[in-house]
Structures are given as structure tokens and as C-alpha cells.
Image (cartoon, rainbow, N blue to C red; front, side):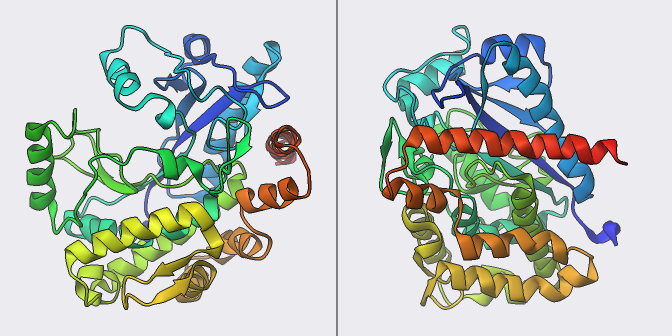
Length: 379
């Protein structure tokens, strides 16, 4: 069945710091020693990129092996990998440059400062058919808030609860401010060229939105969809569940464009759909699974949990056909118990300190890697 499945790859951004949860920037040193990692503009976080594959078992290896390698390096410095997607206990005023010679990093620091110092997961799905790619972009743009709600893990900033479940998405500078629902490839190319001419984008990468097309020569040569809205998901099984739901939505779209493409299936205009999607994203950033959102098909208000349950029901027949149903089970757990932010905030409201919550999260990430090593040794 894998021949009908999509290639999938991840860009994983991580924070490094002490075992008590304070952020410490060492990406310049790490990237000199570990070729698998690349620097972000601020040296308190760094990124690794997995090789695309269709198989979820292979993807689990690809996600956990770099973490193991990084952890060994950090152990020697008495440092660790931090959970969460914002500077939970870090200095939110000072930008810590990782590369003083990089002009793009200078632009980032000058124009955005520490609002961009976040950790996240970018999920890439291979789609070479451009008509399908842009239909998928429209569908995922209209449902991106649901994926943010499942992944939310950034309720803290600078030692305080912010009132949001994804402070990362609240503060991250969406650029340009108004991104249309692209009708097709030609529309996207013309729009990007216009933004570059007007100086609203510095380069073709400077499109910071919930989902975007990606490829080897943007905007002209595209081969994948990149979902950028998710907070860091420390639990790899949950990340794979979120990815499976995303993939199943796109396969259903491929099988029935008229039912799933918002331009075909919604009574709303393209402009209205873009505004609805962006508003949903911010509402989900504040309340995640408890949010009341606007459904792209009808415009009616729907609770986030209910909408995710709708999606799960919709993809279940296909998931069973593709032997992917078990992959989705961690989502059910999140719907019952809450996402990372909700679990943290519940404990925080009962007097547990942010430091203690981060320490527990550090241990959970480390145990996942240990369990993975033990499982590998039994193969």
C-alpha cells in the first residue's frame, strides 16, 4: 500500500539548556562537531532535517537518532534538550547571534528580535502534482489550527504563563501579513515576485505562514507541502500521529477534490477563507483544544475537539485500508488528557513551578530515547 502514500520529512527545531530548564546557547559549537545539525539565527536553538521516507517506522528512527547524538554531545557539557517552543525560562530581551557574519541573521535580529526565537516542527509531505499541491495547501491552510491545537507546547515565556497555549504562534511574526489562498502555481509565482519587488519579502524563503509550498527552486520548482504551524512535539509517536492525520487528509483530497478542496466545497470566497483560517490559527494559539473555531465548509462555529474528532472519523476507513489506524491513537489520548500546554498549565495552576514542569519534560524526552534504544537492541 506504500505506493499510494506520500514521502514525509521533518525539520525539527530544538532548544538546548541546563537540566533545571534555563536556555543555554551552544549551536555554534554543536554544528562544528555534528554535521547533522544547522544553526538558527539565535544560538539557543538549532535544527536537524530528516531524510524523506514513506514508512512511519523509518521516520521514527530518523526523528530519534539525531536527538540521541545531540544528547551525547550535550551530556559532556552538562546540558540537555529542552521541551517546549518558547524561551520558558530564558532571557526574552537579548538576541544571542549564532553567526555574526551572516547578513540574513542580521536582518532577522534587527527586524524581529527574540520573537523568532522559538522551537517548532515543520512537517513536509511530497506532492509533485502541482494541481494537487495547491489544492492540498488550501485544505491544510483551512485546517492548520487543528494541528496547532494538537501540538501546543508553549504556554510560558520568560518565567511566566502568558495566557496562551501556543505563545510561539502568538508572537511569531507572520510574514507577509496577508497571504492569499493560492488558486494555482501561476498565482503563487506572481504573488511571490510581487512581494519581493515591494520589499515585503527579503527572499523566497521569507514566507512565514502556517503552511507553504516548498521545493528545490522556489517559487518555480515545487515538490512538497510544508506545514509550519506546529509547536515542538517532544513525543515522537504523537508527532507521527499528527503527520498520519495530515497525510490521510491529503490522500482523501486526492481521491475526491470536489469534496475536500475549500475552493470547490465552501460557499466562502478565497479572501474570506484566508481570513477565516488566520483567525482560527490565533484562536487555537490561545485556547488550543478548548477553542471555538469557524469551519471552512459552513462558516459555523465548532469546538476544536469536535472538529478533530470529525476528521478522525472521516479518515478512519482510509486509515484502516492503509494499515495506519493504530498510528492515530496518540491523538485520541491528547483529546482526552489535553496537549502538552494544557497538562503543564493544569499543574502550574496547582502550584507546580515552571522549572519543575520543564525538568519533568526533560526526563520524558530522555526516557523516550532510552526506550527506543532498548527496543532497537531487541530487533
